[in-house]
Length: 408
Image 1 (cartoon, helix red, strand yellow):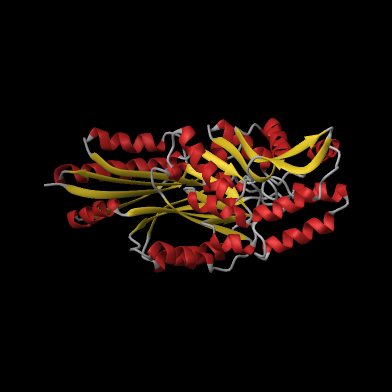
Image 2: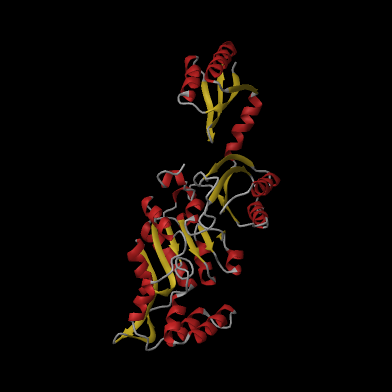
């Protein structure tokens, strides 16, 4: 016969506390079935589930009680029935999901709203952890602040339940909060490739608009872009007509634009950390190779695929070389890069803001619409609207204390 006992310890965190308590269990040859520990500020919460014999249980609890008193922490014992334990074990076969709350700040009300949705869909919360560093009380620059909380949940959602839950989360009041809902599987834990759109995603401009302004045809180019946005012409026709208007522009203008590109918030930090943890990165752009290569040289992107402008005698001819990189081509390139890197599509991430990014966003294991147009936000798997590009790191499950020295 066995006894199953759950021990919950709480109080001020002290060095050696866990060692002292588990040594008592070891002395009586108890079997630890589960253990978990969390620290909030200087407070410790430690839970241990163990099994032992009825003959030993009394001695174990007495010794643990004395040790807890000596250490100045609270201890509570809860007997667990065999039936309750077996039911708990059976739940480990349930699907696991990750809900990520991301913004400049995360309020108590927002956490309450999200956890209410989790409850209504019958999921169990396994763990909650803060991914961003500890926030100071005063002197916070709101424009640079970041807050991220990750909630690990478990349960069965049924055939249509995942889409219904995602929809329920997306319908919550935004209040500057982005909510990501992902299945927590082997692919999420082993992502290896991230493909980015360039214009309005990596840089805060459309390079063709910058070129058009220098060529004195800004209004004409914007009018063609508007036609394409309304669906009156396709991307290739729109692109061809806009490039034609650039004929005669001196190539030196491209260098001047490249040197002054406005990078989107968080780009440098994101690229530094992605390279540090071994991700391959690619630019898949409907813009121009010249600017993609500039970003590659500056930030270390592994691949660049974009449109090549034809140049003769130091001037743009108004034509391009090769096939246009449109939405279909971006999806093809994503597939190709996965083959080159020897990974599953589910291990790829795609990030973009425009309608021509939707094919690759839907194809990748994780598709993220970054400060995107409303149509793209409505059709993307996940959205980032609240902070910069380094918000992507949190959707990947990376924690500040793991990637930034000094963060905890």
